[in-house]
Image (cartoon, rainbow, N blue to C red; front, side):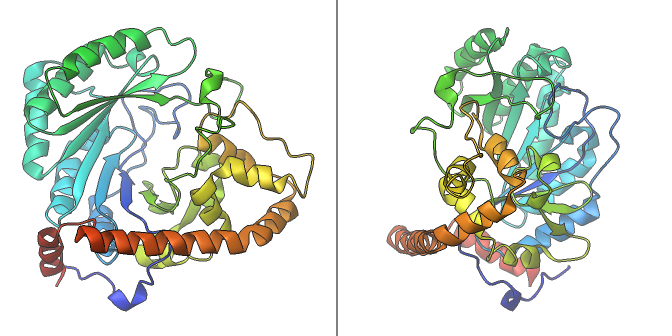
Length: 366
């Protein structure tokens, strides 16, 4: 069995990655308008199983990573690879999750068969995406079949419904899955903001979702904490929703460097640390002190939108000056959070991963 790199090479950055997501393919049975990765049936990029296994092994020396996610595209298109990847991750003590549009759940029998295979491999949670865009390609009955099968199998099951102004199906979807939730305690129903890619097609939301509202103005807990691996083995510093517009979110090539080395390199990325703590909209606002032409839009409803504009600023000097001025505050807050987490872990007497899972992982990698 392949051993992970030496533990001495991992320096435990102040913002620790806790989730590792594998974008197993960009191929999808759907071609949703404004899909974050521009996935479609025509895409062919695929992450090899051997690479997934190797990177999971490398993740073993980063103790805070507790959850491994398999997504796409549509990860079920390569079902054998998905099952073997889940099995590999769960056997090493990770909580595993996958994300799907449920195209495969054409009836309840097919849904139960697929879910049974996933559960046997060690899957703990499954998320389903549905909404106006997805319904053009996958009927709602498929999502319901899949959700029922997953809930009956005891998996934590999440329904993510697209949220935007003018949605024709949102109310019906909420009603259907809220009714279903009464029968299954592990079913979670969310409405997630569906955002545009910044091109000519605009998606609008109610002003209550604006990031300029004090209630929603907060740090981005995805950046650095949630890492993603693309089909060409690039490591992303976040969920990667708009990574094609923000190349700075690509941390490096996992074919050339180990996961821990790429994570270690983020220790000194002050801008990403600031975004993590206060959010990109707060960074943009502070940068205005050095360039009054910068505007904080009231149409931002998702951190990725503000992040895209932040990294596209032509006046990079203003960003550097803002970061330099904020540096003492950022590092003080990071250290305070680190000390709090250490104290809290001591009080709770636990770590993000159970001691049994930790021992199993160490034995497997030893």
